[in-house]
Length: 327
View (tube, rainbow, N blue to C red):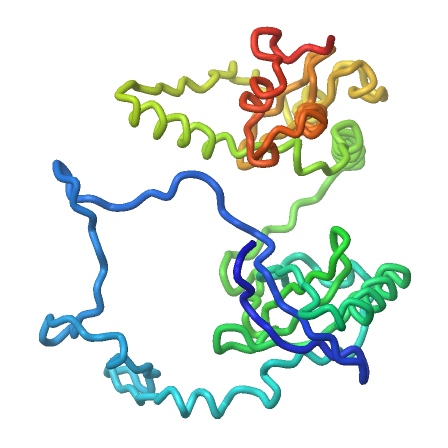
């Protein structure tokens, strides 16, 4: 179990629900620290006075805000900041309910799992969860986390409630604020039809287990190899450069699967895109999917299976040497 990031009360109308928020995400892979080259000495960061260069104790550090262009600041004491927090900063009051999916992904900041705080909170918690799930709604509230206030969405998610903090409207940039305008380009009917056909031909069902952090896996292998005194070399596959197409129409036609109009997955070969990559590969006939490997690992009660790579799963369920083929 992990420590909650917030403990308070979720108000469902006049029904109080004591809750705890737990972070729903966690970065995986080796944590890289800094060292002085040629030594085992870690590089540390300390708080120093920029004028004297001397270290400052944490209890002597206060916050300040710039008030002018010439390094003019006002100092804000902790008690002054505390007074600014909204009344009932340990309370999330639901003020309304939206249709699920009404908030675009651009607005989402962080997501937390919501747990009932005590046994007495289980029933109102389950009541809110079931009501939101059956009405396909999400509750809107605000929450104070780490000295900041956020809009928050309360939604049914994976059998529990989740709380997703959102950005404020003035924090979401307009495209024109950060990038040059996109020039208008006229599209021909043929180009649009081919583009729609390509999207349709490569449409897939979302399954996060089909995506792998290939860089994170290679980094882990490199760390393990160097810890054993060996080396690890990654040689990326060199794809043949595509032939230059004569125009946008021809490029779109060349992008379509060979058997147009047919579901490419019906032949036991489905499109699969790796996370953070552009390489598209096809699963050969009979190849066991990662989902099936996870299912086998679950049946065998393999510990730590949810965090294993595909190769680790194949080894854990006894498929090493068979190239992960169906039996």
